[in-house]
Image (cartoon, rainbow, N blue to C red; front, side, top):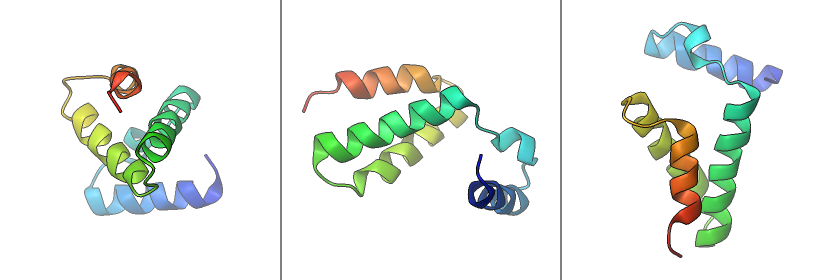
Length: 80
């Protein structure tokens, strides 16, 4: 995680009350989130859909009913 993202993560942790360790991203998570963002931006033609879809994915994962990789696979299969 680069310095900017780490500082942003720490700010999110402070405001949310979550420990920074709960907001760590491993290499696979980074790759998958960037893949989801790329699909959203390129398939929809709207770059603004990338952060919005990532936000929705985060809500779904945090809810505990699905993992990040399963969500990425669902987005890859979504009709255009």
